[in-house]
Image (cartoon, one colour):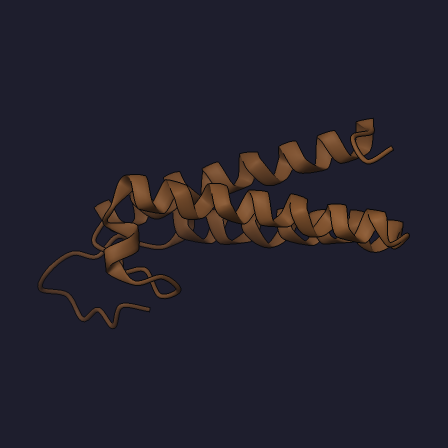
Length: 109
């Protein structure tokens, strides 16, 4: 079954870490840092950015479903594990970045 216990946990993890990515990016921007992956028009619009995060979660579930239907069950699980892991790393990195203080030698990276 597609909606088994393992997939529910994996999809929940993806959704949780996408939400954490949202909050960590907003926190990073509030501390004077810049987003390097998405345009400012997207991340400055809270509803638009939340929609991007929700779409990423839905896309991950959709691709997992296609993999499930075509019999690629290991890839189905690994897709979610990889998505969860990469998103967790990105959120942790956002929180770990030092704040930008005007007047310092800051390169924005």
